[in-house]
Image (cartoon, rainbow, N blue to C red; front, side, top):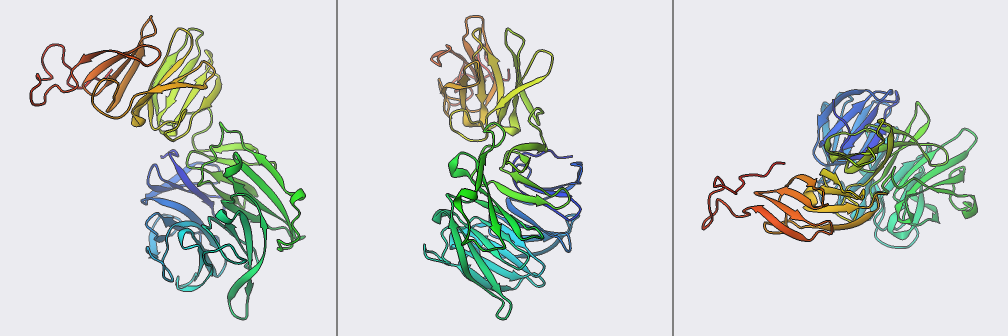
Length: 436
């Protein structure tokens, strides 16, 4: 069984089975409607995924600008596309949408949406072209398609959503209408039988903002800005990653979102209603554990890039962190320790540094960089604190000692032992590889 590591996109088939493109595992992972693992198959750098509801075939867009098609058991069926600017070529596949006849692909850096026949994957036409005028696009990121082949495009860097409508006589799409909304990234149109449709929009430039836009029929011209409902997801629940994607579960009639950290179910007010995969209070790969003087427990969840805290009785308290190299962000955190004042020190292993947090989990300071020498780290193996709140870090061929402010005090071992001009690492006082 595989747990989520870095979900880039999610899609559902007509039975509610979930397909997740996971960059951490470099795979497509399939779960049933109850969230139980079914199977997975390897696929390198899949960043977009869609399901053909009539056949349950899976379409995955890759970083290398190919689209791979599989059956629902992971058997490869077809591949099309490559890098370029011509018809059927892509420069940054950002989203895929499918209706009963056509495949729609957001070709971001070519500033267009390309449309293909679903039966033979042949190129049909495209909409867009670089610019700011009506029907022109600038780095489109998201797509959604109505039942009448109404094509809605998140025209991201033009800060608007545009609608292109279909002419059955010519089998072509033309610009119809638009409305302005800051930094739209992902879209989903929920149609109703009465025509009071709802367009859901994710636009992360505004602090994890998610908006629901009432659309009468399919026309965007009458959209009233005062009718738009906007909410923010809790920052510790959803990171607001620039590649967040939305998907609709047709069985539950519920909206889901993925952001390369977690997949969540969103209720009508854009609040988290459920986690999929590794949940808020569970860990995937615990890398370190520490307990403070009050009995509070801290665990590094290495592959979910976060810190989890529990009370002495085991009840979940809080979590913080996300993938990245900024303050309070992590790349495979492992060792963790707590000083006498309750400050938390985390070995941010693949960022080659130590981060210090206050007792409330807010960032305090950091030190270290990649390299060999005092105050530098190659691979942090362990982290401990003594009674005087000095910090000891096992890394490479040494254990380095720092004060609680990050000032280097002493190095045990030899950074360069075993190399030309230095003693062997087997000599007394030397370390071959400090492990903990």
